[in-house]
Image 1 (cartoon, rainbow, N blue to C red):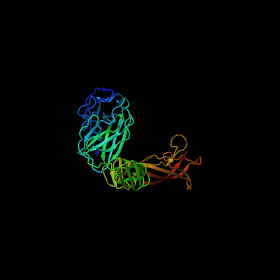
Image 2 (cartoon, rainbow, N blue to C red; image 1 turned 180 degrees about the vertical axis):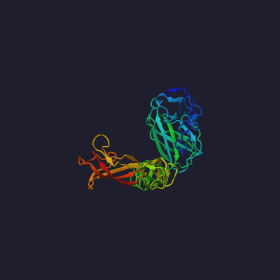
Image 3 (tube, rainbow, N blue to C red; image 1 turned 120 degrees about the horizontal axis):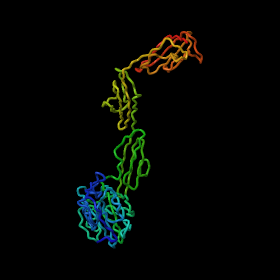
Image 4 (tube, helix red, strand yellow; image 1 turned 90 degrees about the horizontal axis):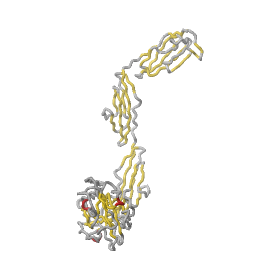
Length: 441
C-alpha cells in the first residue's frame, strides 16, 4: 500500500558504508542505529538494506543519505545518517508496518530484567502526522511468518507484547525508555506501532538499545578522596527508595557509609547497595626552591603516602639530589593523588665578606658609607655599630646600604668604632664577624 500525502526525493551523495555503533557492549540489537547497509536506499520500503533488519509487515522504510523519506524530515537521523520509519494505515484492524531482527545469538531470557531505549519522532506533515499511539516491541520464540499489508505484529503467530512506549506526539527526536520481562525465551524481536484502529500515523526511530541488566546498578564499592562527591543513580525505573529516605532518581554522597536503593519500573524491580569510604589526600610539600653549593646534597621527601613516583623514576618515599634541575613527586593514597615540584640550583659557591677599617662620611661621593668591600655567597646579613663605650649606635639588615656615620640624625665625631656582622651563607651556615673601624671626615 502506498502512503498518501508523502513527498519523496533522492539526494545524490557519495556511497558511504556506516560504522556499526552499539550503545553498550550488552546491547542485543545489532546495527541499532541503522548506520550499516548493504546498499543505500533509493525509495520507500527498503528497510532490508539496513544490515541485520528485515521487513516483517510491508512497507517499512530505511533512510540514509540518498533517501530521507518526506521533505519535512530533512533534519535526518538522531545520530549519524541512518534511521528507520513505519506507519499505521488508519484502517479498522489497526494494521501497521513492522521491522524485525533475529537475536537468537543473544536471546531474551525468561523472567530476566531488560531495559529498552530508543529515539523516536512522528512526521511533521501530511495525512500521517496524527498522534495516536506509541511504539511497541513484540517478541517471538522463532522468526514469525511475514504479515500481510493489512496485518499487525500482534496477530502473527507466537507474538508476545514486551513493551509499548508513551504516545509519540513530537515531531522532534525524543527519548523513550522502559523495562520489561518475558515469560518465554525470545529469539526474534519486532518493532512496530501500537495497534490503534482508525489512526494514520508515521513514526521514525533511531538508536535502539535493548540490554539485559538489573533495573539498578550502583557499581562497585568506591573510595572517595576527602572533599569529593559521588552521584549515585538509581537507574532505569519509575520509583525509588534510598537508604536515606530519598525517593529521587539519584542522590549525592560525600560521607562514608553503606547506601542502598530499591528501584521499581512496572514489572521490573531490583535492589542494590554500595559501600563508600573516604580517604585523605597526601600532604606533599617539597618546600621552596633550593640553591646548593657544589658537593652539597639535599633530601627531598614525598610526605606520608602509600606510593610515590618521582621525576627520576624512583618510587621511594624520598630521594637525594646533588645536581641542578626541576624535581617533582606524585604521592598517592590509593586513588587520592597530590604532587609538588622543586627547582634545585647547584653552583660553585664563593663565600666572601670583607669590610674596610676606615671610611670618610663627608659627602664627597667617595667612601661615604661603611659597606662591604667584598660580598659573595651571602644570603642574608645584619650590621651593628657600637661606640667605644659600648653604646649601640646603628643596626641594619641591609648590609649593602651600610652605615652613613650618623646617630639619631647627627653626624658622629671622628674616632674609633666597633662593628659586628652576623650573616648566613648560601650553604645555610650562620657566621659572625667583628672588627674595628676608624671614622674620618
